[in-house]
Every structure is written in structure tokens, then in C-alpha cells.
Image (cartoon, rainbow, N blue to C red; front, side, top):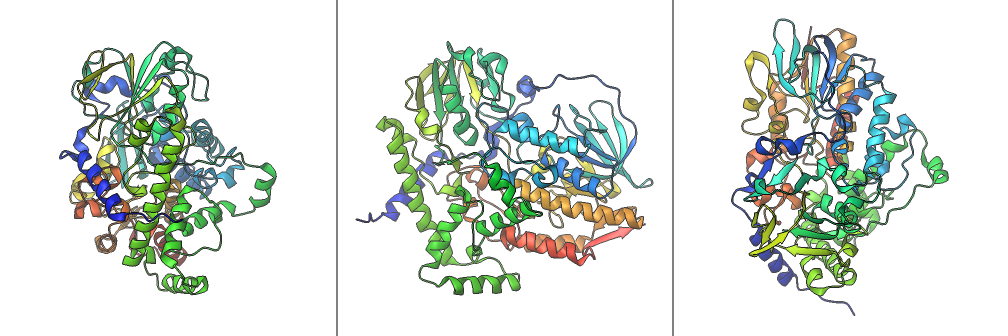
Length: 615
């Protein structure tokens, strides 16, 4: 017997839960690991080593040694650009995977498409979804393979980057006294590198141990990132604040050893099954033919977009979401006809149907409600205590917050030492010297773990800690005062030989961020390689090309996942809505598939439309 879902009732519950969580301060409710919290930002993984300041010249300087810097460096090395420098505040390469060494850290995107340059380095992932240490090791593998450690500056923060009109180079200074020049610069500091703390009254008064998950203190907890038990917690009462992707991964590990674990929840995560498995070497050898990883990345984009691919190579929770929407939208439409329409849209470079028709939005809503009912039913089936289970049920659309996938999280609440403290959407009331207060009740603890995530949003330039001073002394913060202005998400008028490696105004593909990076790296390598071969001194987009691109971005309809109807989160500007300034941070109106198709054609044309090369 088919259960008829009361959509109106479900949506009313969603709205009620959203209303509890709306806060007028939006993103200002969080605070950085700086000022009185600066000690929490220290690098616990690599010793700080004194060195002499650097005063030299490199061809290309890249701010950020995460995947962006590594992949761009690799492609430039392949293009013959040997003089390349990475600069990073961390003690090594890896970016977010350098910092995130908390227990249970794992990527929720399939390793076959998430780990870049697998084909080039000859590496086979151990599992479909690999753990953090393996991702970090692969980043280090790329750095060694392409000799990117040479000239790198770690534990170094950029102070200024200023265009030198006469010499036609960028002058870069750092907090370690470095003062050097580079012909080209790029910023690739990523969306997940500035850790944030919740703005809870009294947070600075706690006298016990506290740390952010990106600065995990294994000296205090015992264990290690490879999974050794945290045996120093057997007599400790531990609090975790945050139940997003990080909390979902570290909470089951803490539950194994802590004397008492309190999980403080404002909004429950949507947690679907993981279904991880080892990679079979024989199978991998059969699929790893030349060009295999690009084919897999492209297949993922096709399955995530509005097209109708003939196969799903990835077959994960992300592509399942899109598959459900397509099935609902198609109804009884013959597949051959749907594919014909899709091919015609591509031929005319039209936006995918999933972004341009109301009926697909309706299909999204129907399929989403059905799926979320399944996820809520799974909570009931796994969590034994009915009261706890009820509070772990997410009341929002699946893509309102980043979906999580775990086979360990929900069972953790069946452990006698683990208690969910639901705050009814309000968050922790205050922190005292000895614990946390919710509903007027004090929970005394020895340690607070902040699984509160990272700053994420449109104004990524504010996270860098420095500003670019371009032609005529113009600051990048001034140029972007009313929102992003770029060509293809990469180039800025008035900032010659500078690149911004990020998702906004490009593919904006959150489900597989490295694909954005790999594609931008190909574009940068082609442009710089051309400039070096022809002896050009400067590359810069015209303002007309930038304006045309921004106007195109503004035609992108607000996606369903950024809707202000969603429960507050980083995908919808903490529920504050998206004005034009924030809408400039969207992606191509044709989605990720549309952007990748556009930029691939732009590269093939070889005329670098929109850019001016000067000698």
C-alpha cells in the first residue's frame, strides 16, 4: 500500500523549524580564531622553523598550497614553467586536508573524481571514499612528483601583493620579512580554510580544554589521525558543538572512548547511507586507460546536471539526488525523446532544463520530500531512543544543507555514554568556566570540541588576510566592493597577470570542488604558456569582457539549494537571502556542465577572447 504524503504538512514543519533558527546577525554570529582566540589557531602538526627572509624573483607565485596551488603548479610545470612558488600559512601542502586531521575525517565525494591527478601520478585510491590521511598523502605525492616543494614558503602569511608599474611584476611581502617579485600571481586560498567559532556568550571563560576540529589536539585526546583509539578520554567528559559534516564524522570516534560525550545540536544533519567499499586493483586496472579520470569527472557533471547520461560511473549519493529528480521530471516521456531535447539544448548552449522550468522544480520538490521521509525513517529505525531519534530528524530539503553520508553516526547515539543535547534551533545559551548551558541546565565538561566549520560564502577575498593593489593603486577589495567582477571566475580588469582560482562565476560545483580547480588550472597553463612563448609581459581582461561575463552570471536563476526558504546555512547566506552582490557569486546559468562546455570551447578556439596580451 502506497503512503500518501501530506506535502503541505511537511512544508509547514520545515517552515516552523527554519523560523527557530533565523538570526538577524547572519554570518556575524560567528567569530574567527584570532584576537583572544589566536592560540586556538596555532599549527599543532608541524613545528615552526626559523628561516632567512626571501628576496628573489619567481615566474609564478601561488598563494595557497592546497589542491588549487598543487594542480596549477603541476600544469605549469608540464607547460615548461619551472620557476614556481607556493606560499601558505600551514606547515605543508594539502590545504583543508592539512588542517582537518580530526578522527574519522573522510571525503564524501568519490575518490576517483575527488583526488586530482590520479592518472598523472599513477595512484589508485584504496576505497571509494578515502580517509583524510590518504588525501593528505596524495597532496604530498603531487608536490613531490612535480617538485613543488622547491622554493615553497610554509608557515608564511602574505602581507601585501602590489603591482609594480615600471617593472611590470608583482611585489609580494610576508609576515616573515620576505620581499620578492613574481611575474604572475594567483590566489587559491579555498572556501574552507578560515576556521570559525560560534558566537556563544562566555565562550572565552571556559577553563577546561577546548579546540577547533581543524586543530585537533591528539596530545590531549590520545590516538591519531590514522584511527588509533583516543585512550586519554576514558576519564573525560567531552562536549561537541556542531553536527554538520565534521561532527557527523568525529562524533562516532569520540563515542568509542570518552567517559561521557554530549553532542550539542542546533540543526540535525541529513545523514544517508555511505556504502563505502575498497577499490579492487583488477577492476581499477581495467578502467584506468588513458584519459580515464577526465571521463569520470565529466560523467559526474553530466549526471549532476540537466542531461540524460547513458551511464552513471560514480553511482553515489550525489548522483542519486539528480537521478531521482530526472525520473520524476520525465514521467512517461520516452528516454529517446528526452535525450534528443537535451542534445538540442547543448547544441544551442542553452541552460539545462533542471534550471529553467517550473515543472522540474516541482519534480525536485516531490522527489526530495520522498527522500527526506526515507532519511527520517532511517533515523527511527537505527536510533533506539524515540526522543533522541525525533530530534535527529532533519526538517528541510536535502540540499538546504550539505548532505552527509555515514553508516556510523546514527548508531553512535545508542551508546550509553553519548547524549544528544538538542537546543531546539537556538544553539547553546552560554558557556561558563565549567561547562555549557542549554535550557537553563548546566552540562559540566572537561573538554569542548568546536565542530563549527569554516567561513564560506561570496566574499572569499576577505579571508585572505591581504589585499591586491593593482594598476593605478586600485585595491581588489574596492574593485569587488559591489560583488565579484571577473572573466570566467579567473581574471580581473586592472590586475594584470593575476588569477583567482575559485568556484564563483565559474562552474560553482560544490559537490566536487577539485573539478573546478582542475579546469581552471588547464586554462591558466594554456594562457601563461602562450604568453611566455610569445614574449608577452602582461595579460589582462578588458572591462567590457568582465562586465559581459558578470551580466551573464546574473541571469542564473537562484538555485533551489540557495533559497531563503531553506533552513539557515552557508549555502543560503545563513538565511539572509541573496541580493545582487551575493548573486554575483553564482555560477554559469548552464550549471557546471554549461561552464565546462563554454570554457573548453574557449580554450579550443585559441584566440583568448576577452584578454589583452601586451609586450
